[in-house]
Length: 157
Image 1 (cartoon, rainbow, N blue to C red):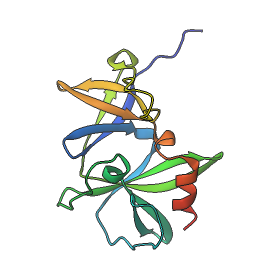
Image 2: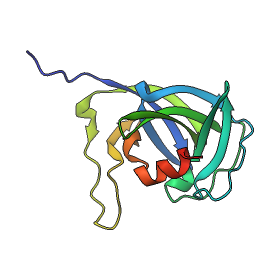
Image 3: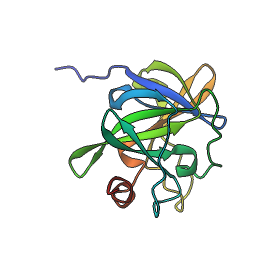
Image 4: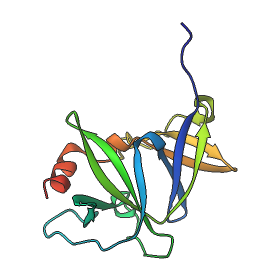
């Protein structure tokens, strides 16, 4: 049997000036910015919760999660609703992004390993660096962006 090395489709989105990508298979939908209800005593990056067709969905500000300045809401600001694996279960989260770019396809040979930046920075959540339109795209491992403690703090709302 041949090894399966096929292209993967990624949804690209921007945070500040950077382009990030997540596996399109983990994306449920993309929403326009809506009313986000603040929840007291949650981590800074936790913006609050939204009502998604009767379900409470926590919304994370990806810029704050990655140590950038907080999101400035614009007409392009959106919430990417994703499924994250946590302790064998799928958890639905909203990821606040400055804008959604496009769905791109990347072959495994277009993706380089994540850069090793040093021991004090955790870059486990970066699957690799892809190149698209002469720009680097950081490909994220959505399951590794949040520690289980962070997810519990957010999902245990």
